[in-house]
Amino acid sequence: MLGQNPERNLEIIRQYNDNWTLQEIGDHHSVTRERVRQLVARAGVNTPDMKLRRSEYRKRQRRVTKKCDACGNDYLGMGQDRKCEDCIDNNVRIPHPRRYTDEALLDEIRRLSAECGYTAGVKDMIERGRYSHTLYYRSFGSFKNAQKLAGFEPMGLGAPGHRKRK
Image (tube, rainbow, N blue to C red; front, side, top):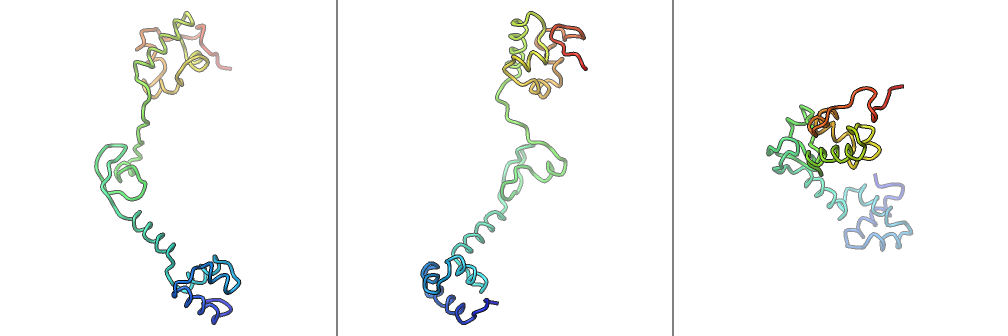
């Protein structure tokens, strides 16, 4: 159990129990302190770093009341989980924090349309817009809906900013 030289290993364990440091034991027996730590661990003696790991494990396993990031309900959680069991089971996504308002997005379409001289499209937003065109899909369902809410008629095929499919 303790390796090829059980007498030496027993002496190492005795020295460890007598509060010798791993470095002192290793220097005395011409082995590294990591090897001393391994031998002590294999013998079943709790080293301070093992005790720390166990307490960290217990701390992670302790359930605490948390607030679900997806639905806002309180639940008993552990570790770094952020969703309650219902949201996990139903595959509910955690909403992305917004750094913009719907009005700011619509103002950007108005600004870009004034700059272009026609209703700004997705291509214009990609090339010269301040926001990603995907934000419009997330916020309004489609870019056309955003154009309508901004007070413009959505562009049709052949409009100046329309990208033709190849």
